[in-house]
Amino acid sequence: YKCTPIPGQSVISQEQPSPKVGCLGGKEAWDTCDNGWFLCKPMPPLPKETFHTIFNVQSSRYFEWQVRYLQYHFKKSGQEGGMTRLLSGSHVDHLVDEIPTWVAPTYPKLAQDPYVPYNKPTAIQHWLQFSGINAEWIIVTDPDTFFLRPLAKQVYGGDIAVMLGNGKAQVVAKGKPFGQKGYMDWVKGGPFESLAAKYCPGCPFVDALAVPIVIHIEDLRKIAPGWLSITEEIRRDKPNWDKAWLHERFALQWTVEMYGYIFAAAKLGIKHSISDRAQEIVGFNKVVQAPVLHYSLKLELPGGVQWHKYFEDAGSNIPDPPQGTNAVSTRFLKELKEAHDALPPTTKKWTTGYFQAEL
Image (cartoon, rainbow, N blue to C red; front, side, top):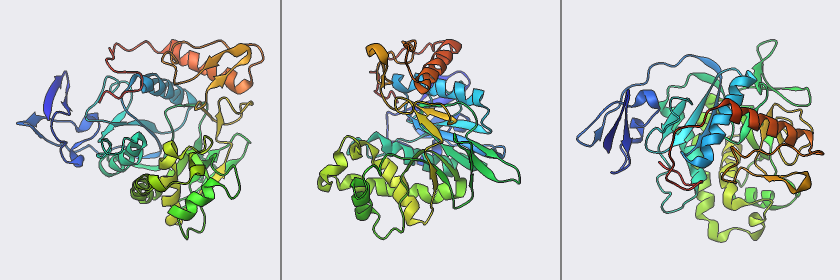
């Protein structure tokens, strides 16, 4: 590794094989490089928190505006605890002083199997092992979300609860996490059941869930290794996948990592409480009740107006909601524009494509 000097910090660029994974870390963990060797510096003890929120990305134009807007709305929401961007790459990027960041190594076998979501369980394992995080409850979200108000709170009596959009408070406990209801059980006896039968045989249950997840840190520590290994197992078996698993409404080619988590939890007997009221899916739900907006879908608005996070100008070319736009899409476009207007553009000069990771 070659040292690249930046005022106040030292970073490395991936020109030689990676150092041991224990030497990679967040901004505070970087020290010096001499003669190609990377030297580690112990992390200081982190303050104790009840909650901490995490998400995983790479450094790209696609994620740049998403992570900045996510942090803007997270701070505004009043959700207790900090939030950390788990950045999969070899060194820090231009957002490290704006967004709390932990750098984790990318999945080491991406050249053989270029499935980028391997990075998520890889980064979470690395963060749990080396960051010194001192939080009891972890909120796992995606970068394409906005927090409108707190998702999880400590309620009367000391219980931890997820504050759902139906007015209910879903209590969680160690061994009993929460997950947003996923899409995968849309057909009884369909692809989810056949997938579980093959890769989670004998499991007494499988939870049809997605993010956000609210989970005790010790449960996440237990799940993380199996999350990655089961993801690897399913991907290795790709030549034998059932055609039903490739249906556009199941899309296993992209969602394997989700099932890695679900099956790892099931094999450990960790059952989630599930509700579809933790988030509103922009482009699907119509009434704003839940504490989180998730903009994973393409917006098809009245009058033929369209918006999608895949558009290269999605973070800046924000349409006004046409007359007849439902409340969820209207609120999302309002929050999107507010974040855009509140945050000055970065000075980063990108040399890569919209989706291509720079690190």
